[in-house]
Length: 565
Image (cartoon, rainbow, N blue to C red; front, side):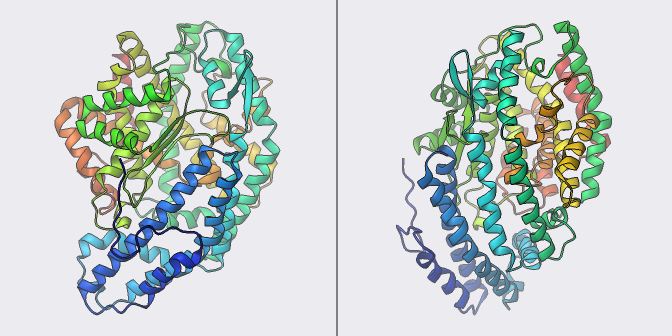
């Protein structure tokens, strides 16, 4: 199945081989006279077509590079774009933004329809600095090194060479000696690259701080709040969120760990945190990437036929790369494709329950792309993470209904569900830890590596339960932050997972009360793209955009009650 794109502004079969290929289109938009509201709306559509085309081009370069980090040609194709094309687009995009804001017909546009778009545009103009263009190119080139470093890591277990993702499956093995062996090998491999990753992070902090100073900000944290369009909350709200997690979530994590310790009958070590408490072997919900895909489609069909249609369409168009292998970047993502409107799911599946969660999560992102595809402008589809992650995290929960496809045995499903719900509780303190770490890092950009290490250890205690014994492993614990890809590649993109997780729990609570109404509200909210405020989108989904202590408390009580069932 192939999507044929017929351009109205660009030439068909256009291919970006140099800046000169697309420069005339940017210049045409820049010099075009706009003499009416209708001409302004046509100009906006033409700009959107160009932006969508360029966006999908860089998307494919990124996807191909992460699928095969050993292929230097793919890496060079990506780096060519970020070093040669993007720096030339930035100043002309700023000029187009200014042309739009200065247009005498701007006031005639539907102000409700364009409010979010224009609000973001004005903020972009406010923080744009030409001297940041080469810095941004350098940051993009440096940050991709993280994936290359991790993509090359492998360990040997039982005579087999495994990626770190594949080896981490041993952490669920009932054999405690095997778990310890896997934990130590994975962490020894990471430790061998600690210095390299520290040096890379120092370089990124320095570059990012300079970007902030150039744009007139005191620090990169404040710059990013503006750049990410965080109009709906402040840094202080984030600190309040961290505190609420400590007060309302940590006691539940401690209770989960106490139950684990009692069931296992020995002191908890880091390699004891993922094994089944009854020492049952790890669940294997699928056998291959193809099996994972087939079961996901059947699972989604039990919730809503449209959800299954989205994943089937992606399969027809070869928009999935699911299995873990050496030379593949770590992690998982759903990359929206702005022009064809059919996204790409990338992940490192190794037949674990966590992989099922990841696939359903990325599937939620994919459904979001499909639901918002008919919005008039490409910019209307560019949702903030607080909304994007609501789509994915809600899907993890509302798809319980179809997860018997992965776990036909009721007892297995009960285990997987308990693991998932406990995971939600346990991830919230980690989210708070990573976010608070970033606030400190960029508010103190001149810190030393030793100070950074000490602060991370302090945070690990602050958001820990004190029940896991890291004796003799302190050096590993001091660098656990290095496994968080977001710190290197997408700074400050992490607290949104926490906010969206609260929203997703509310969507699921509504779903349990009235499935048809909850699914309809979910789909309606996602189809808005980013044409309404975050609060209005959450309201359309039938929930609140709220991360106060009282709200967190009510949701933790709800999850705890579900766990007890």
